[in-house]
Length: 346
Image (cartoon, rainbow, N blue to C red; front, side, top):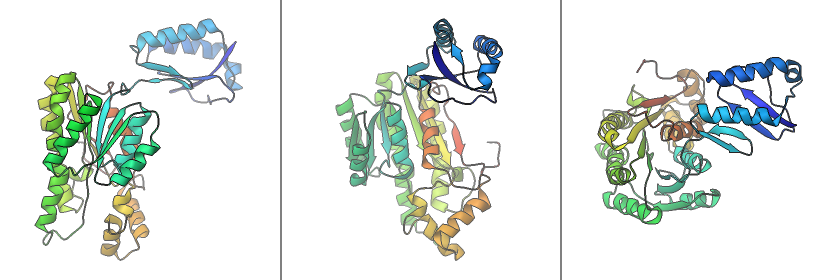
C-alpha cells in the first residue's frame, strides 16, 4: 500500500496528514477526476475523517494517467507532489533593478522556477550578494545604468553572448519622490522619465529581435495603480500611466511574433522605497508630522482595504505568472496587485 494526502480545491474538512510519502495537488475542474475522487471519498469516508487514506498502486497510476491527459502534460512530478509547470525552466530572464525590493523578489521567484537569470542594477554589490544567494540556476549580474542607451545595449549583448538568447524581460527599475506639483523640479521629472519610461522602451526594443528569433517572448513592465488613479506624486503618476500605454502599444506590436507584453500595477509595497532614509516614508512623515513607521501604518489603514502594504513576494508572483507559458495568451493587461485600492472596473 502507498499512502497519499490530498489537498482538494473546494473540498472542506480534509487536512494534510503527517508522515506521508508524497502530496498530490489536483485540479478539481476536470469532470473525470472529480467523479473518480468523489467515488473514493465516499468509499473511504471514515478513513478521510481520521485524516488517513490508503490507496492501491493501480488507483494511483490511473489517477496520474487521467491527470496527465486532461491537463495536456502541464504537470510536474517531483518530491512533494504534482504542480502546474510554468514553463520557465531554462528560460533566460532579464530583471532590471534586481538588487533590492521588488526586483530582488522577482529574481528569487524566477530562480525557484528554474529560470536562468540576467540581473541588472546600479548597485553591483547588491547584485553580487544576490548571485551568492541563488543556487541551482545560472546567474549573470552586471552593473547597468538603464538611463544610458549604450549601457543597455551592451548589457543585452553580453547576456545573449553568455546565454545565447533572451526569453523574458522584466522592466522593474524605478524610483519616486514626493513634492509640491507647482515647484517640482523639471530636472527630477526628466530623470524619472529616463529611468521609468524611456528605459523600458529601449530595453524592449533591444530584446524584440531575440524574441523573434526564439519564436517566443514575454515582457512585464512594473507600472503602478497610480498610473490609473492619482497618488499625489506628479512625476511617478504620469510616467506610470505612460508605462501602461506603452504596454498596450507593444502588446499589439509584438503579438504577431508570439510575444506577450503585460504590466503589473502594484499599490504601495513594503520595500526600501518606503523605509529607507530619505525615501517615501520619510517624505510622508514630513508631510504629516508623524514618525516614519507611524505615517506608513496610517497611510495603509486609511487607503488600503486590506490594511497593509503588499509584500514584494506578492508582486513577484504576479510577474512570474504573466510571463509563464500557461499565461502566454494574456497580453496587454495592466494587472492590479493592490489590496483593493483601485475602485474602478478597469
